[in-house]
Image 1 (cartoon, rainbow, N blue to C red):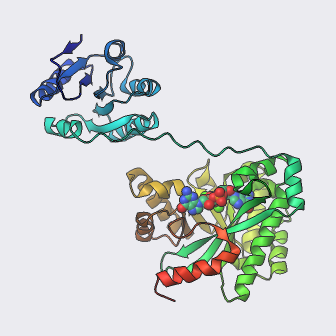
Image 2 (image 1 turned 30 degrees about the vertical axis):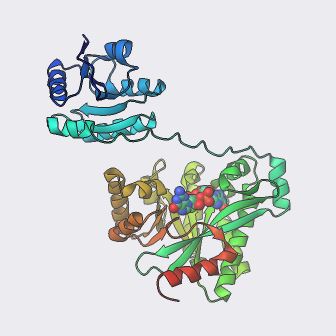
Image 3 (image 1 turned 120 degrees about the vertical axis):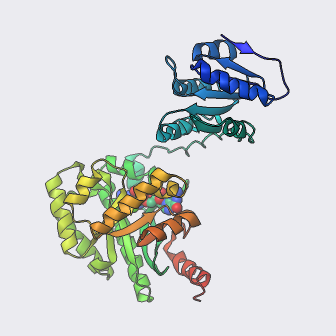
Length: 403
Ligand code: C2E
Ligand code: CA
Ligand code: CA
């Protein structure tokens, strides 16, 4: 059944709801407000007769047969430009997921309402300014495959360099550490990020010499700063495949000795891929690294498989909250709960807490409020060449009124 009323200058509204009573109440209210609503009792009617109409579409999520979520996908495929209003009596988290799906399908979401709602609430949503269509995500820069021969040539030519990103103490805003991040100074393609070479190096058995080169450079830079009176901890990323070696603790110790820094200045950041191999070997290696004075950080906390188990098993000294949670926490209650509970958990376990991906003032305020120890992210500084760090520090101090 499709019932259309007289045309109007206001945008056409379609009410897609399987409940005839609710649909009738909504349609009557819209008509009183001067709109010309059309009711579609199910998605088949909607798509066969009305689906291509522009204007506003009010969609009930819960419908027998094709439900509202499936309708959103179909509208996305049709590149529908109508404004969408979601209505439902589902749990708020389901409604929030439906909103994410709508924007993921690049639909213009005007708003969403939980049943039962007041007519005035519906009218507020309907008459609000339609948002622009969500922009297409820029496609990731093309990652060209790198051949083992090219990686080997780059290693021989010493083309891998290190950039450093500052980590700041939340308590007193002091510059306390850097994370060393690998870069490839490619002669033709310019400066390349790790996405272009780490996994290729891992697959081709070249990650060990690459890690050695990066760590040696990071430690030497750290020693240079120390000589200049700047005592900083340095965090390094280590890939599983470069390890699995029982002598790793001795190797790290030797590297610090050669550079002239102390193990206490070094934080080893460990990601998911680590424990895939021999868990007993990993446990031994990591425990001995701790005994030698190195800090161990569990990187990207919260994203991987069995992170809790690792937290329980391995003697970590630091927990690094993943940037995806930090980025969303200021605006998204669920991300905030995850950040709050991870911090509470870390505190109970006596871990040093680091937040990465701090991009805005709100992110910084949040990690301060929740009691993180250190923050890292674009809000403070982007990764930079070692030589640029003293200059950045000067500006940082000036911004704090310490120059
Ligand atoms: P990661 O360990 O999680 O390092 C943090 C990444 O987040 C870095 O990307 C950094 O530039 C970026 N980042 C920092 N602050 C912000 C922020 O506020 N917003 C956003 N959107 N991003 C931020 P990068 O340098 O591209 O490194 C990517 C990953 O590559 C690293 O992730 C790490 O897993 C890996 N990696 C880097 N250097 C090495 C290395 O020497 N060895 C190994 N095995 N892996 C490395
Ligand atoms: Ca890291
Ligand atoms: Ca990370």
